[in-house]
Length: 340
Image (cartoon, rainbow, N blue to C red; front, side):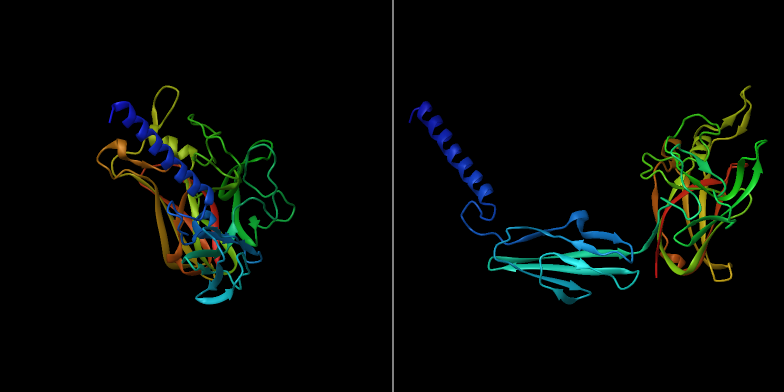
């Protein structure tokens, strides 16, 4: 066989193989040998969903190789529906485990679905404060009624004004301040203070927390289990920890973070009387344990913290433990998730 004939044969064989593959893809449910393949289930968000207690969640599985199939939905191991799509209505604020099965004469598949039903405190709105269009940090509530802090979904975030300027505008506070600052800066100054040092603020609405005078306190309307919350460095603290702070004549005011330094957020549970329960979760936003300064940890994004260790509580107390002298005790909080 000549080389030209052999090349032509290889070429035609390749075309036949490609045609077979294309036919298989077009058929959708058959292999290249004409065999029906078993069904396969896919869910959005990899089968994990969050919802508020008064909502209804429509679950819509996508099935590949779905031919004359039967479906079954299970909630906590019990069959509840034989429809393709399922409307889930929770009976409480807790975690649910569902399963969805599909079967036909060519095989079967089962996929697990996890649903967290919770009260999500995301600071997108407040009972007693409305964010203006311009990014800002608000150190007092915009209301004539003195509630002692910012309120969202019946949860009170205590705030106290400690200082005002000559125009009676609050310039220093203790506790929580609503912030919508979204642009970080590399310059130390007032514009850096009260801004979460993160790559993406999402909704750009969160809480700036000041613990300089005392721990910051959250008061719940009833007992909850805190599932999780998000923490972030304050832009001002992040910059000081990295570069230190100096006066105009280069005199050092605050040193940058060095070996074995840390900036630790400590969060305790409170009982019905506002006293600490003894349970606590701690998390380092800055940690300099590494021997190489290039490996020091300075969190530069929102960090989701598991709070299950606190158990059931009536509130939270937040404070900062810091090895660097005279540092401002500032950090940011977002998305506090509560369950029964």
